[in-house]
Image 1 (cartoon, rainbow over the protein chains, first blue to last red):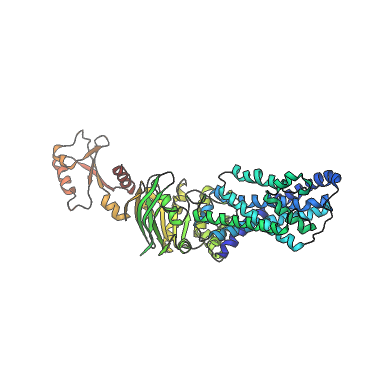
Image 2 (image 1 turned 30 degrees about the vertical axis):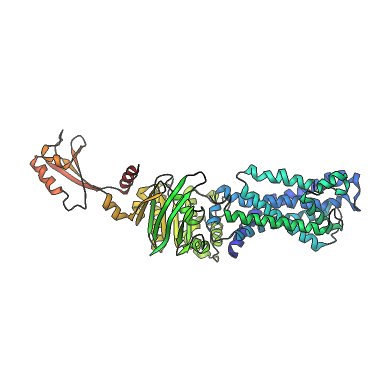
Length: 253
Length: 307
């Protein structure tokens, strides 16, 4: 393993993040605040409580998931797509680095960025609503795993994409709808039975449910299934990336 | 001693286009090899395969004795690549982009080495500048600095002077010469044959994916080049006298000059008898000039023969 190369890629990606820190920081804070104003104050006043938790507090884990999933995906996809776009990918391809080195560097940086943003949202949310975290270690584990597996997914999207439109395609058309329909703003017990059954096919539900459990001890699906889902998703992403580097798909001609 | 060997390299793209067809090439340690060929000849494909950017359809590449597929890490460690296109992270500082290149190759940070490179490439005052603020010529030098940052033994320069001005081109040649003195093996692809003539030790000519010639530059020029004598006459003539017919002379400059081409390596060049013939024909000379075929003329002739 080329540890120096991993650190080099990681540092370069983090430097890019810190160059646009205002944008990286202000954007999630602003959107989270807006969600709290719209869903927490306006709609939340009509709902009162969900599963014994005040609605404003109930949506905190979902909002965090919404943001870190989209941020992890977009950060990782942009991280690897940009060198492809401007042509500097030749350096990575001609350097003595393995697929694992490159993946750890890029995905590690994207996961760190989304972890940072997740923390920012948590702090921002605390300014709007009062909530507690029942299982802080489980919360941290879910947070890190989600950042990691969606960064892996973003990395795959970045390699697959051949233009900026494709880069946005999956986050916009797949991830965001799945997150919204995966219980970000509601518990699936609030849905009619048919929609409850359909929602069980949404993989994001398991992540949000597990994450919410770490906050309030309530989950739509068993926590063990949530952990299994996120682990399987991470493993599948890693296997896909390994295959990409082995075959050179979309990166080597 | 060879530092790089390509054996039976073939590359057929998914479109069915054969970019390389069983290419064999050996590069000696410490030499400057010019890889010449027209557009689409396969120069960049060959470099890309050696550097690990493109996968060969068949054949092997040994870099310092390491197979570039089965021992890719060891092979790549020895190579630095300056690509044809200017591809740089625009918002990075010059020194940071060099540190990145060095780090990618697993090398411990060494700013003293990087500063020496900046100095050698006249970029010291641009050390902390963002790449997007630099001129095209400076960016090309940054690419060279990046390629050298991990102290490679082999440097590929893929058309390094494409689109640069004369001053920078000469500076680039000087840099290549200094790198050679430092023991770096240089493989240079170029459209500018004059560049190869100026700095290469050996020349490989590639066309339609096949290596046509690999030869010492001087030997190639002596073997394939012609020499020409231009004789200036005191008085213009309208036709070549019969006594000089056997020399295949050409009349130029409105009858004031006679051009004679000959094989410089032949035991009898015919120059002495030609001069005697001129005297016999009663022609008076005012000056004599000689010139040799350039590598460019040889290259053009080879390409024409190929068609």
